Image (cartoon, rainbow, N blue to C red; front, side, top):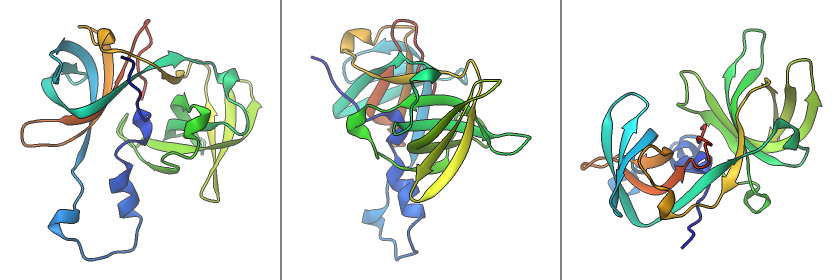
Length: 209
C-alpha cells in the first residue's frame, strides 16, 4: 500500500513555532519532544524499525511509530521553479551577501503554505531552511536567483547550477532496501530516535535535505 508523507522539510516545526511566540509559563505536559534529523543509508528494515548508518558513520536504530508515513523524492529542475510555487530551500549565507541554496524542494500544490517561515537548519553549520512562495525567479549567469515571500517578508536566494532540486513522490515499504538513502525527522526518545515519517531515496535520487 502506498503511504504518503508530509514533506520532511516541514516536520518538527512545532518547536520552532513555539520559540517565536511570546514567553508563557511552560508546564511539563506542554513540552514538545526534542527533534533530531537522521540522514544516512538503510542497513536493515524490520517493519517496526529501521537500522541506519548515518552520514556521521554511526549506526542507529530508529523506531517507527504506529501509523508512520513514507514517501520518496523525485528529481526536478531549477527551470521548474516558477512564481507562485511553494518551495523549501536550505541555504547558507553567501560571502557577497544574501543566501546561496544548498537544495530546493518544490512542494506539491496541495501543500502550499505548510510550515511557512525561515528558521535554522542542520544540513550544514549555519544553514537555514525557508519555506515560502516564489515571488520572482530570474535567470542569471550562474544559475538563478529567486525572491521568496513568507509572512509578509521577502528573501533573495541564489540557486547555483548543479543545486539539487526535488519534489515529493510516492513510495512503498519495498523501497526500504539496504543501501537506500533516507532522511528521517524524528523525536529523541530514551530508546533512540522515534519516527513518524520517513523520506527514502529511489531510482538513484537521494533526499538532499
